[in-house]
Image 1 (cartoon, rainbow, N blue to C red):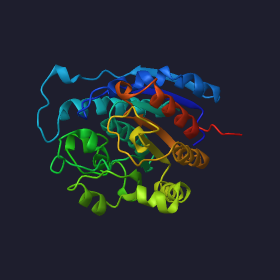
Image 2 (spheres, helix red, strand yellow):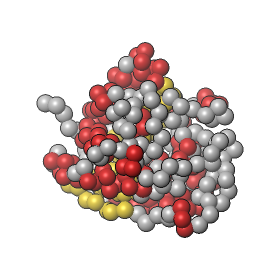
Image 3 (cartoon, rainbow, N blue to C red):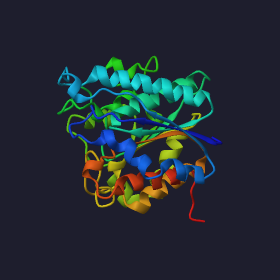
Length: 304
């Protein structure tokens, strides 16, 4: 996409899940020298600071099937507008979470920017979880388990319509990479949606290179480019202990770098977000440091 300018946007939201601490993710990632290291790659980096978000202590969660729905929708709406403004000004947004519900706002903003130009986008979702629950299927009511469903048009209208008529992204242009923890009632959504899911078994059998070749092709087919949504729980907890929902059996350090190096090689990444860094569960800011390393790979850092 010829990226030369990056806008860093923090969204310290932790209303989407049960475990507190991901609201500190943006600060932890910045403390790992994200902006300085990106400038070392010769990018013009501007940091927009953090969006104002509601706290769980500020009020009741409302409908137990979709907790804090109104507050999350408001935050995602603000984020969508911020992302759209950044892209209009020629910046590639790099959004720092917060829990994964913020992806609804990021994708809404990217979709709106390209829709104004008569173009569609693709989506590569790198995650241990499918994130395709709806309020009717979620066992917890936590919205951080619903954002991919919302992006393809399934879920509460307060979220699915943030960028106009749904879907934000056609399911056939979505690749879900690394999934290994899917709720029982969520599985039919994944199977029927048209989203292409690559489980950890696919990675085990075929390797990251083959899987990412397919994922990039899917997200690039008749699109202007693709957004990358990286949940740090894709990685095995041995590599990334400080995440909101750790699930063993995940990606390795080098597999994840390879995935993002391949993304960079295409020149088709429009935007990126990194979510679910939880410093409370971390040791020595290790997970945030890894998040910065992975962002560097996505934005072009190479070994030689």
